[in-house]
Every structure is written in C-alpha cells, then in structure tokens.
Image 1: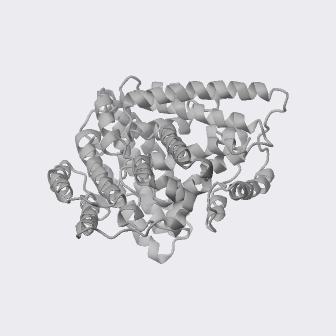
Image 2: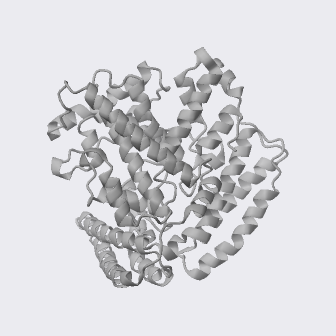
Image 3: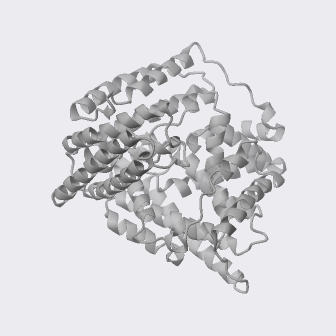
Length: 532
C-alpha cells in the first residue's frame, strides 16, 4: 500500500528519482530524443513537407523505432521508469494512428491553419499540430528585431503551404472539409488583423500578412468549389476509436463505456440542477456582472479569494507562482450580446471559472517545477495529456463546490451542474460523430439543444469550434468528464486506503508531482495498481 504510506507520512517520504537499471533507462531517454526528432516533418523555408512521398517515407521508418522500443528490457525497472516507457510507446502509437486512420495532412483542410492567435490553457494546442504554426500570442508588438525573421519566414510561407495542401488533400471526409472551410475563413480574418497590427512599425511584414490573407481567400474559394464532391465519413469509427483510447491515450474505457458515462452525467446534472433550483427558489437570481468597472474591480478579488480558499481548506500546497498565473488570465469585459456559454457562467459566478483555471496552475508548475524525467518535462504529443489536464480542471469545479466554495452563494452551485450538463452534451455529440451517427451540423445542434437555458449559441463560434476539435481529435470531447471520473475514482481509492488520516492536500500534491501524463499512469505510480 505505497499510497497509504506516502500519504500518511507526507511527501517528504517520496524517494529521489531512481537511476536507470543497467543502462536500460538511459537507452530509453536516448531513443526518446531521436524519436522526437524523427516525428517532425522536414521544413524548408518555413514549409513543412507533408507530401504523400514524405509521409510514406515516415510511415515506412516508424516500425524501426517501435522495434527499438520493444527491444528495451524493462524487467526490474521501478514503476516510474516503466511509466516513461509506456509514454514513449503511446506517442509512437499516436503517429501510427495518424498514418493509418487520421491522416490530417490528406483528410483535413483545417490542419493547414498557420496562425495561432491565443495561448491554450493546456500543455500544447488542442488537436492536430501543424509543424509550421506561428504562435502570435508569444510575441509583443512592435516586434523586436530578433523576432521579425520568424514572422517574415512564416508569413511568406503561407501561400506555398496552401499550394502544397491543394495537392496533399486527396481523401474524402466531408465534415472535415466543412470544418476546414470555416477555419480558413478564420485564418483570413486573423491575417487581416495581423496586417493592421504590423502596419505601423513593420510595413514590410504587413504586406507579407496581406499576401498571406489573399492566399487564404483563394484557398477558401478552392475548398468551397470542391465541397460538392465530398461525401465520405469523417469519424474514425468505433473500432478505431477504441484502439486509440487504449493504445494512445492509455484510457481503460471503450467508446460504449464513454457513451454510457456521459449519458449518466447528463441525466445526473439535469436532476441536480433541478434540485438546486428548487432549493434556492426563494433566493434572488444570480445577476451577471454589468459593467467593465465592476469586472475590473471584482475579478482580481475573486482570484485572491479563490487562492485563499485553497490555502485555508488545505486543498493543495500554494506556491508563489499560482496566484499570478491565475490573475494573468482574467481577460476583459465583454458586452452581453457577445457572451457565449462560458461567459454566461463566468459573469454570474467568476469563482467557477477560477476553479477550472487549475489549467494555469498546471502550466505554471511545468514552467517553475519541471518534472525530473526528460520524457515528462515537455508536453506529450497527440494530446495524450487531455484526461489529466481537462479532467482535473473539470473535477475541481464540483470538488470545490463540495469543499464549501459556494456556501455563502448557494445559487452558484446551480452553475456547477449547468457546466457538467454542457460537457456531457458536447461529448455525446462528439462520440456520435466518431461512430458516424451524427454529421457535424447535427452534432452542433445536439450540443446546443442539450445545454441548459439555451446558453450555447447554435450558430456561435464556440459550439462549432468545440465540435470541430472533437471531430479532428478523437477522445478530446470526452476527456473532461471521463478524466474527472478517473480522478474521482483514484481519490476515492486513496481515501479508502488511508482512512481517517487521508489528506486532500497530500493527495493533490503527489498527483500534481507526477506530471501531465494519463491518469491511468498516475494511478499506477500512486497505488502500484495498473489498469487492465
């Protein structure tokens, strides 16, 4: 009962990271470095090579890396090192699935989106990763001289990237094509905005951005012209979905398990929402924040109050970087007409989105306290971290409600169940897209219609963006509540082992210390029990 002993004694009882056994672990680390280089496409003048020939060559060499990994004998390795071995295997399986099933370079026009305007709250961008992307959010304007070269190279590459895409996109996946049309309209708008931002200080780069925008317009028109010829399915199918969960994301569930879980969560959320509303029927409704001044005054106080709550209730050890990481993500006030689902929630109860802001604690921890393992130090590929990242952020919403976060704001508990219902509805839509039961447009309508109070705009960018992500990245839409369920199971198992001496803070600290890896692997390290 390793977990019970550790939690009873505290984290100081954790041993130092073990050395490799007989050089075997060192071989794994070396292979991991070579693997990470191998999986990148060749880039020439800012244009990644995703041509059919290049992808065929990569696929042909992949088994060589898989054989080398299988040849490493992990007998006698400590669990932490066996976990690392499994993480490398999962990444290799991810590339294998890309080649056999997803093929984003030949099926999905949206894969060729170059401009990334905002930082994700997850370890890396959600969904497939295009190697030539420009993360605009990383830069400040006007650009220092050291950053102009990357903008020039990338912006000038856009027309050639899209020319290559016209040749590469040979598969028939209608809904991915529709998604690609929407995404490239967004890309054109982003480039137009970027040209305006660059114009005052970098007129040459502004011209490059405008040329790239024109290329996007042309590419979008080409996609529109080809859409009538597209009739094929975009979902991966249940069998492939199950393989992906098990072998890439290391999730011990199947597609049918996930459907059952989300149908149950949707029903549970609706019932508890009704009970909370009935309980609070004599109380005044939650009024949304009405002015920019109220937003600017209230939000910093809510951040401070939330971090203080975590400290006072001994939920997690508070580090100096945590409150600044959360405070930096307050955002700006938006008029009522512009608010979609999450803003409808946040403007009524800012603390709820602060609890989901556990994401920003995770990212700050990765920056300030990187994991000692070179395999866990950087984000895993193929969104393998999704159930850990999204699952914990989602779990914190209901857990903190149970811990007393809304004792003085009872109507705020209603919003916890609104959030769960929305997650369940959108995940069910995504699951049924992958079984090819629902096309993209119907999935959008299902997610919107099953979100309480009509707060998810059926024609909004949010619902279309979410369903698009869940279609292009199997397992992502279900990772929120599925990951939450796995974390709750693990916490329940820990509390059962430890008994009266169980400490939420000790549990959370050890959980967080193991890195942004699948919950099944965290459970293996914490309990010694491996998922079947």
